[in-house]
Image 1 (cartoon, helix red, strand yellow):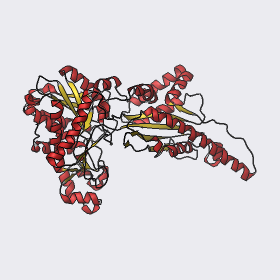
Image 2 (cartoon, helix red, strand yellow):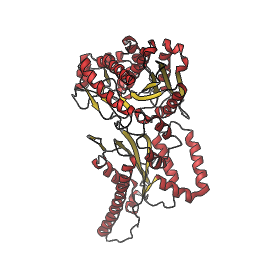
Image 3 (cartoon, helix red, strand yellow):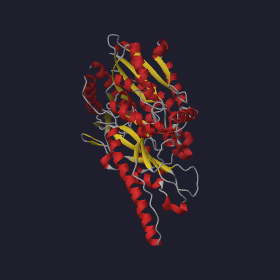
Image 4 (cartoon, helix red, strand yellow):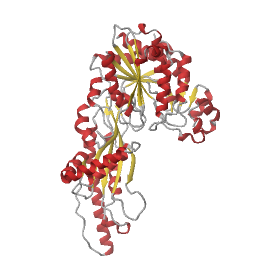
Length: 550
């Protein structure tokens, strides 16, 4: 069985932690360069430099790269295990005065005041069994273990009953553009080196399911996610004459009230019930203060999926949006009548109907109405947007829908529903193919091995719940992506998109086996040292052996 060099593992881990590869910035390239340097120092890649590649992400404003490292084993087998990990980390602003040392665990732990920590973090800090710092859990350790696992295999490649491929991707903490791009690189490598991929293993960290949870976990699949934006158009008016308009904030609030934490919109797969949707942002589109009511507002909502396609929920939200529009109009009408009754005045009412459109419907009508002028205008807008690769994808989608709506013949109040990036397809456990059946069997074996060899209680979960790049190696709702998501996501084909046919070619079973930590993305992020540096590498090595035996 493969044996990771513990000294090299820790050295690699601390090198990666010290590299401030903040997601969504050019600094991500520092992480990529460090990963390449670590591999270039290994004798195997000095002898086989063509097995280490860096693939630029096409049309990426930050010039980021995907790094792949391949160790080819016994030539009689082309069975290949893919391991993935993300090279970016979130920023450290939440560390406050300790921000500058957040990437140096030794210095950070010297400066941490235990009394400032929550009780659980304080207990862990005082135990001396945990390493605190940005990225130590998410996911420098998983990357370091995968890298040193390749080094272990490279010491005696002929003993490896197949091949190991590691793929390091940027941008996981934002839009997963790295992994989306990497799927094409993986297909190219398979063709170049005659690789038969049998599984994709991520090394994202595991974590307690609840406070005080003593168990560790491995995961058979991964939850999906989509983000649904609602763009509400009202009828602006002077703030002192509020009854003569329809506030877009009222419309969007009525919709949020119907979506927020609505368990009817929570997906279910067997015994797994995922969290209901929640609003990630809600605001109007006014750029500065004035006494005019906002003419438009928007919100976007986070949906998690385990079984149903996004279209299933999109259709339900359309019904809720009609309710929200209807109630908004009724509120405006009712309160206007009360004003008339209280003042003894009598006036007319607006006769708006509750209108809800999908983005594809809006686009179709606007294009027909605007003709050549519309096409010319949108082309100019796209040229301008290309100059700003740093623009948030959600803001870009908002700008797109605003420009399209400008050519829509009816400017009356309405709600437009659209998808915005990112989209993470779910992968639910299945034994539908021999490869997927083998992966499912091996995950169960890993849990048993952890108990017998290390006396660790390791649970087998159907889904990794925190979302990860595994989502892009299998597509279980491919047709809905083509017919529903693609035409209703303005960014698709411009600044975002999934290579659907490429992902369908991969169609890989997945699993997540990672280190043990707590509080990812918090200033108490920490990694359990013994499990992560001693037990986890052994479990991953056992997994590799069992998969290649199969």
